[in-house]
Image 1 (tube, helix red, strand yellow):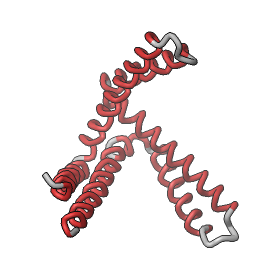
Image 2 (tube, helix red, strand yellow):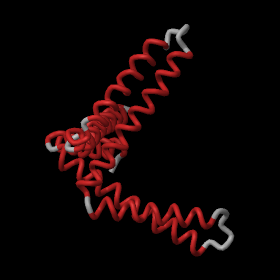
Image 3 (spheres, one colour):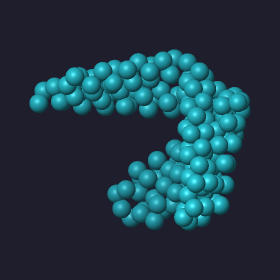
Image 4 (cartoon, one colour):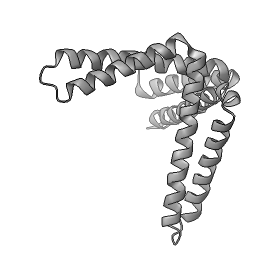
Length: 170
């Protein structure tokens, strides 16, 4: 299979996945939570195993502790995905707040440049989104992760389709 065909096929699959995620953001949110849980379980197992078997590993105790923490967090997300959706949504809200605050600080420091308004608006939007998520976590938890997944899948799908079309022309 030619690279252009691979890009087009994967792009189409991602595009369809994005549409499905946007059509049912709650189910997509549960899927994200379960996937994150599985990744944490895998990472926790690997990190704990490395700490147990790696006699020369620096900071072996900390590596093992973080591995066990990741393993427990992953099991928790898989065992109760509804609570996991709320936890991950709260985490996303906090990330929006923090990145928005950093952008506002950068805007203030660059207020004499042409980047000021872009950073100011971007930072204000992130802070507003983070505030909305954190203050109404119940409503945000039912759809935010799924909407973000859907938008990301759509963007990736469109990008890969564009790369496939460009590769096909060359």
